Image (spheres, rainbow, N blue to C red):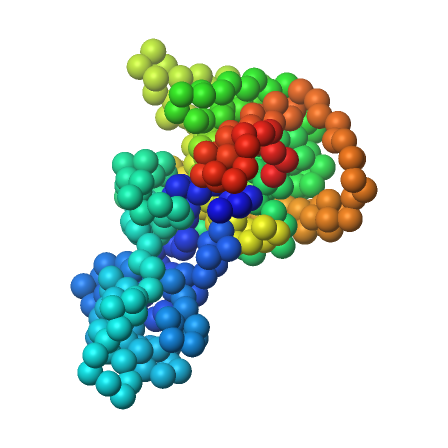
Length: 354
């Protein structure tokens, strides 16, 4: 099967709170899937197409733990096996829909796209802050009318904050400060770091932390292709350094999590979450961070949607120009290309532009 998505991989399909006794339709890597919970609360993911006349099961209804097609009444259990058909007692042996491996972890519903026999929940990367009582989280998801690789590029090069997100999280020093990039080929992780000393405090942090004046700021990115992006962000008044035991209680920590899930070849589910270890019970801080981060995400969405229209019409043979700030993004492209090749027997290994 030829594909532009890495297969035999776990992808975030939804937040846990999105999956309930109401049927949820979502397309993941071009595959239409219906999600719901059994009466005991277990998440289920089935192919969103009845075997009879291909009606959307997501437009159907639950009867207890059975999913009843809203067109002709074909009825499926949570394993995807058809247990009842109209007008006859015998159910054809081939009457079943695909059941997808699904795991609920760290507030996300993860679904496996690929060979079911290769699915191992231990391979799902962690974002423990999102489900921890020690952190307070705001989150959301925005549809992106652009290929997922553009969002990967965007998040691995945060210099764009200076220009695209000025007044929110961007300051001049972000673009001015060089990055360091490390690639862990064995475990498939790209690390990109930018540490800034004695810099302007962006509004995003000034209003949420109450810091006045200039700050020291750390941006440590950890990208685990294909889906999970972590930004370990730390801000502190100038001069606050960790003690000998590593205590940096004078600093403020934010864990920014993105799940980058392809919907189709030119559309993406842009899941985002911001967890913090300060002002945890202050609802005004939560409201501020939710509104401001969504604004930042929508600024990215607008820019990447525009970029997708440019790429879709660019002349054959056009060559990008890359510089030092692109090292993390280029490493991610190489890893994604290798994952795509590994899951696609029709394509020879190559460096892909995603």
